[in-house]
Amino acid sequence: MVWATQQDSYGGTRATIGVMNPGGVRSNLSYEETAGEGDGVVTYKEANDIVPFVDNLSTVDLTGEQVTTLLEQQWQRTAEGTVPSRPYLQLGLSDNVSYTFDESLPEGERITSVTVDGEAIDPEATYTVVAASFLVAGGDNFHVFTEGSDVTDTGLLDRDAMAAFMYRTDHEGIAFVDN
Image 1 (cartoon, rainbow, N blue to C red):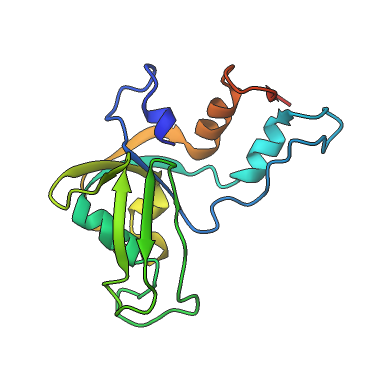
Image 2: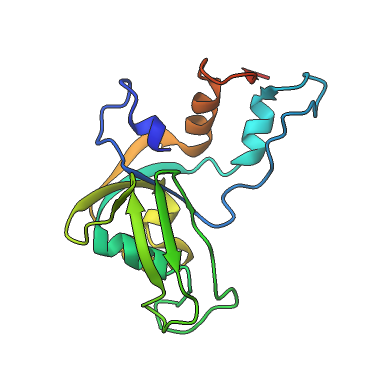
């Protein structure tokens, strides 16, 4: 998702952080032949099976403090403050983001560090985040997204962004075919 917002063909704000909603990836990507196409060949159908929802991607500006809150919200609370039936939902993050946590700490204090591009997150800085519009609207109880600013529909679809990323020619040993 981050890659898609950094292409010359995309005219909006380039994202720094990508976030995938829990359960957003629905299938594994196998290097081995799965549909008679040969090893290392990915079909469009296989890509669609991985991200089948065809969600619009949105960008939103969050402060570093809000990004940390977002990670805290993986331990779920509804808008009313109750713990839902699934008390923990883990987000998928772009590979430039890492964090540590201590589950024994009180709720809201469990995230002990966050880094973006190898640097400690700056609580006051603004980070442009790209995610499915469902998530940016506060879906799955990730309410802090609704506190962000400059929410923009990118005009990109999650599945198409992933397929375009996979279709790049710089993947060693992997090919993407349009069937």
